[in-house]
Each structure stands twice: as structure tokens, then as C-alpha cells.
Amino acid sequence: MLPDIPGIHSFMKRKNPFITGTIILTLTGLISRIIGFFYRIYLSRLFGEEGMGVYQLLNPVLALSFSVTAAGLQTAISKFVAGDISNKNPKSPFRVLVTGLVLSLIMSFLCMGFTIRFSEWIAVHFLLEARTASMLRIIALSIPLSAVHSCINGYYYGIKKTGLPAATQLLEQFCRVACVYGADRLAVQRNAAPTINVAVIGLVIGEFFAMLVSIGAAYFRFYRACAPAVHREQSSCVHRPTAYPKIALSLLSLAIPLSVTRIVINLLQSVEAVYIPSRLQAYGYDSAAALSIYGVLTGMAMPLIFFPNALTGSMSVLLLPMVSEADAKGNKNAIRRTLGKTLYSCLIIGCFCTLGFLCFGRPIGRLLFKSSLAGNFICVLSLICPFMYLGTTLSSILNGLDKAVSVFFINVASLLIRLFFVFFLLPLFGIYSYIAGLLFSQIFTTGCYLLLLKGFLRKD
Image (cartoon, rainbow, N blue to C red):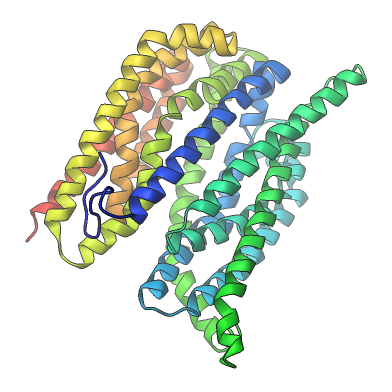
């Protein structure tokens, strides 16, 4: 059941951007996750559990680079483009996009250069795994590509057109899989074995083609929108140099706080991810076994648990602007209805998934990953589902109500709880104590979100 908020009527009565967008993003997310899910199975069999562990160590660098270069600007572009569309201004959205792209590209090229220049240091001192150095130099090439792709996606979210982001998401996945599969077939013909670097190259190629399609789509949309104005000898959609500094300041005023928030959270998540293998070694495993366990947990079991989040994640992307509109109109009844239906929907999805993973987690682990350990992890992680799926949508609602600062501190507190389990309990009790920390922190986060929403709704 989808949230009922201002401007949302029955889907049977008329086409609705929220419902349509949610359906598009959900279907795309499901297809993408299916592809990614089987892709991870393929990678685990091709490179082994230890190889998956090494590959997963790149995630903190990717998350941090995205936070610095694109995360805040994507949201800012989406917000300002949506405002310009509602004000019936056909030219400003393109100026917003161009300005955001320039700012993002400046940051992304600096970030790419830093990653390449200090790849050895990052590998040894940050990721604690020297084998990731060559992979970092390859993956750095994807940073500007991802920045362009993300900014254009932000523009399309702002105009409530989810088709292009959905299409490029699928294209990226297909290119990534095709690259690795092609390299594997070529290696077999030459009686050789591909290295895990092939997976990193596939990621860069996927981002490249997604960026090309995004640029092409944005250009043709820009041309169609601006052609009538040019034909009437009016000013161009883009050529107003004096507008850009003001737009840049407006974008940065929103993007910087969002980026700082993401950077702090991703730094804490990076510390968590990087130190899990080392704390497993403190528990008694050797380096290979620790990386294998880490690879099974984060590269096999967790993606399966996150799989149903495609629906709640799609809802959360589109809930933020809708709830913002309801809040601006002072319509708390609509927000209450949205919250009630969100709670109902996410709890139903979460409880159903928990039951399914508890019953079938072990055979799924053995069948798909050929790993009994993956099956055990799936069963234990299943308890997180109701809280995780609910937390995803509640955080979006709170951000739409201008509670981003409170959400930030709740997330930081949640990560600190997890870090406590990583540094102090994992060396004593092993990997299952970390999973217990995940569950406890997720319950804490969801409970805080609900209390925050309850306090907001009680205000006159």
C-alpha cells in the first residue's frame, strides 16, 4: 500500500508521478538487484571467498568519493530543479544542472588525482590490504564518470522523470557483467585465470556507458526545450553568465551540509568495514580466513538480505519531495496517513522476508553460493529485515520534514554502537557478535526515528 499524501489520488483515476516513479524505480531496482545478485554469485565462484573479501574492501573508497564529489550536489540539483519546474521557469533547470556538473567535475577530478597519487598509502594504511593498490588506481577513473551520471540523475529526479535513471542503472549492470564474463571467456581460451582487477575494470566500463547515455538524454531534452526559445529569438536556455555564481552558491549552501554529513557517516562506515577483517584476526583467524569470512558476510549474505529493499528504497527516493510539499502546506493529517501506511507496508514486507530467510536461508546459501557459512549468516541477518526496511523510509520522511540534522546524529550514534561491537566484542566472540551489533543498532535507529516523528506530529 503506497503513502497517501497531497496530490496523490487513486492510480486508477489518473496517472501519478509518485506511483509511476515508484513502480519504475522498484522494477528497475529489482531487475538490477537480480543481476547484481547472480553477478556476485559468479564473482564468488570465479575469484573465491578471499577474492570477494578483497574486492569488498573497495566499497569504503567508492562511498567516500561519491560523498565528496556527487552525493550532496545530486540532492541539491534535484531540489532546485523541482522548485524551478513548479515555478514554471523552463530555463533555470538547465542552468542548475550545468552549474552542478561543473562543481561536481572539479571535485571529482581532484578526488581522482588524489586516489591515483596516494593509492599505495590508501591501500596499506587505510584499507589495510596492499593488494587493493592496483584496484584503486583503476577504480579512480570511475569517479568523474559517476559524478556526471549522478548529477544528471538528480536533474531527472527533480523533474519527476525516473525513466533515464532506471535505464542507466540497468545499462551499468549489464556492461559490468558483460565485461567480466568476456574477460573470463578470453582467459579460458588462453588457459589463464582472470584476476579480481577484471571486476574493477567492469565497474569503470559500466559507469562510462551510463554516463554517455545520461549525457545524450540530457542534451536532447535540453535541445527540445530550448529550440522554441531560440526560434523566437529569445535568450538561450544556458547563456546567462551572471546567473551561474548565484546558482553555484545556492547549490553549495545545500550540498555542503549534505556532503559533510555523508562524509562523516561514510568515514565511520569505512572504519567499520576496514577493521572487521583485522579484528577477526585478533579473534584467532589468519589473514586469508578473515578476508574469506568478511567476503561471505558482505559479498554474499548481506546483498541477499538487502534485496527486498528495492521496493522501500524506491519509495524513499520519492517520499522526500512529496512529504516536503505536505509539510510546506502544514497538512499534518496527510503526513500521519503517510507514516501509518509506510509503517504498515514496511513491517509487512520486513516480517515476510524475515520468515522466508529464516526458513530457507541455509539451503539458499548452499545452493547459490556453495557456502554453508553464507546460509548461516542469512538466517541470523534475517532478524534485521523489519527494522532495516522501515528505517530506510522513515529517514526519507524525516529528511522531507527538515530533520536532516537529527537523522545525522541518530545515524552517527548507530554507527558508534556498531564500532563498539567491532572493536571490543568481535575479537572476543567472533563474527556473530558483529551481527548482533548490526541488529541492536538498527533497532536503536528505527526507535529513534519513530520517537522523532511522534514528537513532530504532536506539535501544533
